[in-house]
Amino acid sequence: ALKYENGDYIRIGFDGANGWKFKSVQKILMDCGEVPAMNFKDFIKYLASQEQAREERLVNLNPRYIFFIKKPKDSLPYGAMGYELTGERSVAIDPQYIPLGLTGFLKSRKPVAGENGGLSGFKEFSRFVATHDTGSAIRGPGRIDLFWGGGEKAELEAGSMKEAGEFYLFALK
Image (cartoon, rainbow, N blue to C red; front, side, top):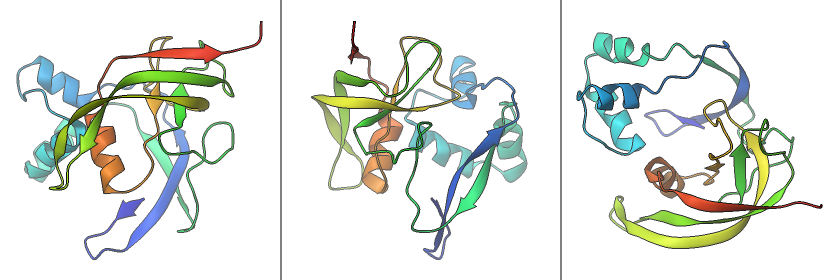
């Protein structure tokens, strides 16, 4: 969803891409020493704090564009399989290495949102998940993205998740 300053919002969904390879603006700036390591939410705040012309130049370091379509406000997020995504249970994978529709088991550490709106720390977690989605930035056999769900808590935790983990797939022989 995209939220407006007045509190209203619209829902959007993936509608294609321009085909260029994704380049992380945050990683580019961290690698050249322009910004320190930070979570994604803080990086977005950093970008927003820049003059508009500089912000546009920085964003344009990534040649990839994603196109979106406006959806009804009551629509739910759907993955590449066409099923509704489930918060903290649906994962996106690279289908060249991992098939869609499998059940897996994930073990990692997760960020924990505190009552003050920031992170209170990290904790161990494990859960059964399903490979419901794909993503342009998810490349290779050693990468998955957990869908966190909606809301401010999910946004904070998802933007802070950079932890390694173990991922086991269940498949018939």
